[in-house]
Image 1 (tube, rainbow, N blue to C red):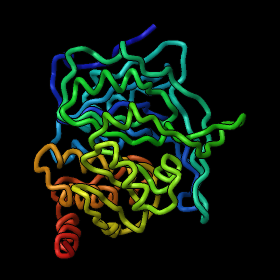
Image 2 (cartoon, rainbow, N blue to C red):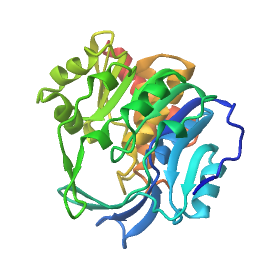
Image 3 (cartoon, rainbow, N blue to C red):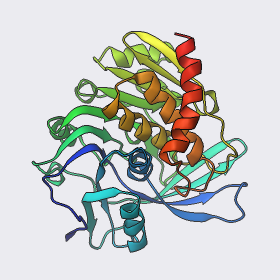
Image 4 (cartoon, rainbow, N blue to C red):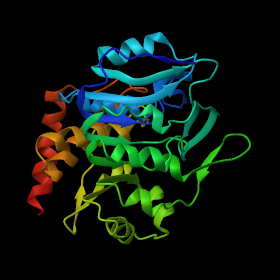
Length: 315
């Protein structure tokens, strides 16, 4: 049984709609005194980061009976419209355990929600940008093809497509490349490891060029503390990482980056400014655990100006 938890009409148009699973994350880290259970998944971080500067945002996602009502209230209080969120009875929400150490992160899948189907995409949906962000292949090619018709700009984070899962749910990387999907994408965002898994190229610029050959307008690769690299109009630009006051938990930083990036792209189309704002937004998220810390618009812009001056000065 599907229970629609929306609060607005399906005829509303949005600046940004994020498609993918919400998650309930258990975060384990030497930087926090005890494991923390938090709301997670790309729709959380992308949407809130985009809403902070004023974008009208919504989601298309599915959760289970175990998804707390408190999470729904928190999302609404952070200006995330839930018109496309469905709670499916007798199922679980997608759940991950994220264990951080000094050497990196281990990710383990504990449960997964129902996949998103073409029937979950309302024919009345319209958005300036739709961001496709699977976390475990819950989005099919048919869904993406239908989404393409509802968006002026289609964005993709392929992380869920390149994830493999062993019998214990431990997450690794696998090869993935779907030319039919990639040919429909205007903005491509991934990590270095993900774009290497997709293209087979170890050299970052070569990998990004391969992706751009599918007629992408913009290719963005986030590189953690090394910042990000952006390719558009056949030019590469290195965007510095924005300095945080403290680093507590990196969960969601890449999603916050692209959420803020896309929100700015709706307004100004200056890709280097969008990337600077994305870097600034990510710098706030890592200062808290899970989605507890997002910079307000003026705070994000203040940090973004410093980055933008450095990037534009190198053009």
